[in-house]
Image (cartoon, rainbow, N blue to C red; front, side):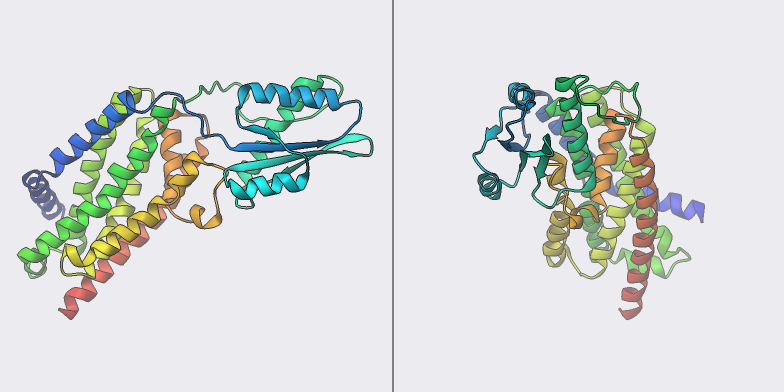
Amino acid sequence: MLNRFLGLVKKDIITGFRNYYFLMVIIVALLFVGIIQFVIPEDTSIKPSVYYYIDYEGEMKAYLQEMIGQSEEEHDKIYKANSREEIIDNMKKSTNSIGMVITAKQGKPSIEFILQGYENEQVKNALLLSMRDEINSVFNEEIEIDVVKLKQGLNVEKIPTNKNVLPLFVLTEPVMLGFILIAALIFMEKDEGTIKAYIVTPGRLPEYLASKITLMLILGIISVLISTILVVGFDADYVSLLIIVILGGIFASSLGLIVASFFKNLSQAMIWIIAITLVLSIPTVSYFFPSFAPWFFTILPTYPLMFAIREAIFQTGNSSIIYSTALYLLVVSIITYGISILTYRLHLARD
């Protein structure tokens, strides 16, 4: 069994060389590294707009205005409104925005945040903690706010904008590219009659499909190592990164196998391949706009995958996301691989 599998992998690697898969992956990786290093600037601002309204005349108003003034120095998208209704009207025009209304409640300032409605709990908690830190720094001992912070000693540096794009490339090229390439490889072998010929041999279908996935994983690992080393050097957690990429690659490749099983050639399947690729790529919007994370984004495997990739590359200390994502992808990969075997058996039996 092992010898048959290794023989299939060797054959697929040779096929990959002959069809320039390896050359294409290397060129794309180097091209993307060049874009990161020389085209994308290190610092850009994509923070949400903040609209605020102060309906408070107490003794702490000056402190609140000082707090907002300090924020305005660091953030150029803070705008004053004349009413709560005006804030809501402005937020309807810009989905990447939040609102803040400060009113009096029992003589003390009360802060109300107005959100778009699609923000997840992590974003809400981060917003509240950030505001508490701002209040604590301005009021000093006048208002005591207890905030429990995990990993107190962790020193997290700001990630340059250009390097922050790297996790998306790792998600798109090494992982998602396997979804497309494996479908193309299957269709090529369908035209040659390789699959039907293999079935009549002692070889087994799971070995045949696993060898195709293995080729995609090899291509993905090459791409990840080239791009990550050239962009961030050896600072990344490469063990975790490769584990995440391999599991993500198995899922994407198995999904590509499933799609390819329903069609006779690439042209017939192209619309479905493009559609599924677009759907799986939708969560990348949340990467740049974390406040925009509706539930239908978070249920897609690519949502936790891209944040796990970022954690493995930049290591902010939130290693739990890597472990949970790895476990999730392991389950999803086993399921999709099992489904791919069933679909090929059904279609081969029908043919």
